[in-house]
Amino acid sequence: MASLYEDAISLLGFKNYISHDPSNLFTDWNPSTNHCKWYSIQCDPLSRRVKYLHITGTNISGILSPSIENLTGLRTLSIPHNVFSGEISIEIGEIMDLETLELQGNKFI
Image (cartoon, rainbow, N blue to C red; front, top):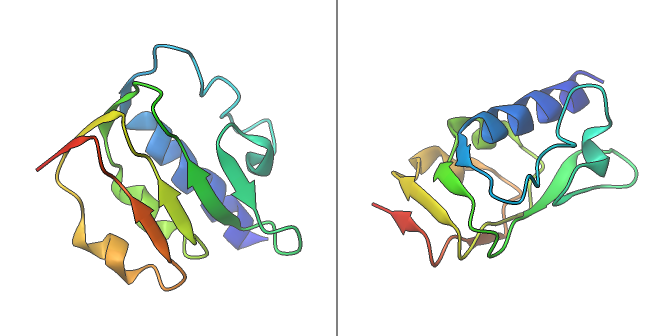
């Protein structure tokens, strides 16, 4: 159960680094709801660990939170064609299950 809590905390950390959400896409991202039901999140049906984070072309801006590295079961991080900026942490490469990383169309350094 601790890992489910860690996934939710990591996602909330990701949300905290979003500086502009013009469509209010993350209003359901709050501790009172199951993180597997949040916008853009898909979880493994058995473990309920976050497997996929997809946010494509929504014009959100911010910095890619280092908390994303704590999603140890993440297979796909797909946030292309938004306005994310700053540096991409090298630790993202240490997520063992990560198979797909889509960051194109942002303003990363």
